[in-house]
Length: 243
Image (cartoon, rainbow, N blue to C red):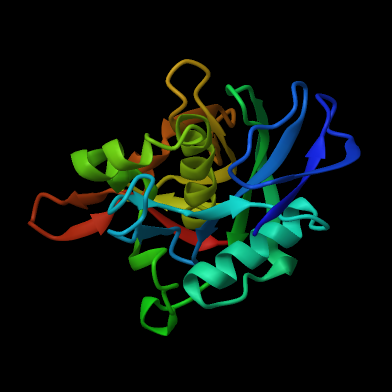
C-alpha cells in the first residue's frame, strides 16, 4: 500500500495522508515527480513503459511517479529513477526544470520536473520488471521528427511545457560559450542561448569579433550543421576555437 502526503493549494503540507488510488479530499493535492536526463552529447534519456502496465502501456516516456509519505520532491525523483532504471542519479548536477499544479477530478497534484546531467550507458541500466522494458538516448529535436515518439510523449501532461526547455538545455551542452570560427573565416563569440519568444526554438546569441561587433542570433540547429564546400569537402558551419 502506497501512502501519500497531502498539500494545500499553496503547496504547504497539511499533515494529512491518503492511500494511492483513493479520491483526495477537496482542496488537497499530492506530489508527482519526473526525471529528465541529458548526457555529455546533449542526448536525452527515454524509457519504454512495460506492455503490462494498466495505464499507457508500451509507450515511450520518462522516469517518474508519485512521492510517498515523508519524501520531498528531489528524494522522490532520485528513488523513482533508481527503481525504474537501476542507476543512481547524480544529485550534484541537477536542477528543477519546471513545476506545475494540476487540477483533476478526485486527484489534483503538484508536479516537479527535474533535469539531471549524467552519462550512463544504456547497457548498464536495469529495467524494473512490470514498469519498464527498454530505453534509449536521443537528441531532443529527433523526438519531434518521429511521429510515434512525439505522440507517445505528448500523452504526458507536462511534456509540451518541458520540451522547449529540454531542447534549450541540450543545445547549451552542444554549443558552449566561447570563440568560434565560421567556415568562411570570421570569428564570433557565443554569449549564450535563448528561446525564441514566438516559436520557442533554441537560438544562439553571438557577437562578431570584427567590425563594429554586431550582435547576431541564429537557430541553434543551424549552428553545428555540416556544410559542403565547393570542392566537396565537408565541414561544420562553426568550429569552436576557445571555450
